[in-house]
Length: 138
Image: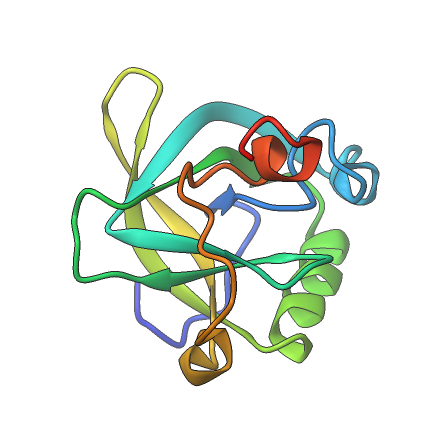
């Protein structure tokens, strides 16, 4: 898969923020995705933008982000989701995560495109947006 390639519903997506199951934007995806696995993304940090999280590549491979792997089953919803992320300042990258069986999986990730904007922002140490938003992480 090439860096600029448009994702298709056959691509697997790593969802780490407000669209995770149990979070406030999951209902947007619920009827359009198929859950595949829980997963961790190694070598990335999770930051809080208050309403939403942002991930950014880290120099430390011990940094992890917790999330879920989904496959889109409806192209029209994928196009809306993709455009929403891009307009909000995220860029689509292709990388690997480890699923709940420690197997490496190729995924699409929306990485925040403005690293300087994250300076001074809260780094979420646990890498888990749900724990952070529910106060378990504090």
